[in-house]
Length: 264
Image (tube, rainbow, N blue to C red; front, side, top):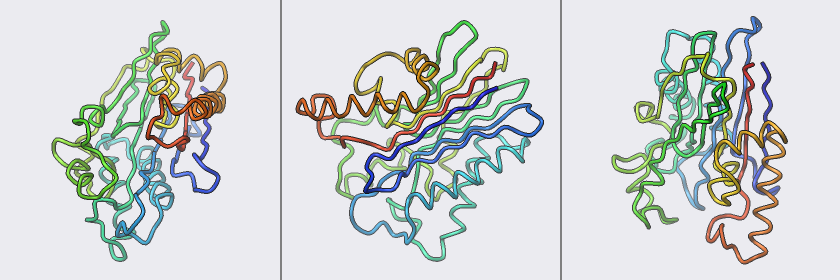
């Protein structure tokens, strides 16, 4: 079994708000991966004295600990408990009801000799590769299904769809959103590799159309997670120089994180 990961900030002037971990037990049987993409708040008050990296570090740490130590909990229950634990660390000092309280997308996977369990919340991606090379993407596509113009930089527009019925959900302070995650389980014999990517890394296929999910996993295997991120940066720079044909109003560079687990 092999785990390889890489992460890079979108800008050297801003902290990286992604968080990633791949954990193997001392026994060598099974493992856990956690990938979070912190949501950057717009300028202004978000009701919290803590930064997004502070939040993702605590949520990520709780997810790793609970996933490994509590096999009796489902991944939905793990996420709910991790959100509750993290909220308890700052509910006294912060307004956790604020729509922009620190929050993150989540990819969580746990495996043993029998099965690979997975959970995806919001727009990061998990890829599962079968022994014959076919790749299945596990996605939470609620953001893609929002009507045009639903998301906006102003708080009023955003508050109508963020963590609301008919909108999309992220891990913030309400543990009940864990029930909104896309979850499932796959027999271990049917998976030879997993990959997790934040949307800064999935730009290679979702924004620039350089290949499908099978091609993404192939690039991860050939060039590694760092190689995928480097190629995304090259594409972003070229597009910005060409007048932002693909990026349009999106940020030129986003935090980008990728993790590859080879189970064979």
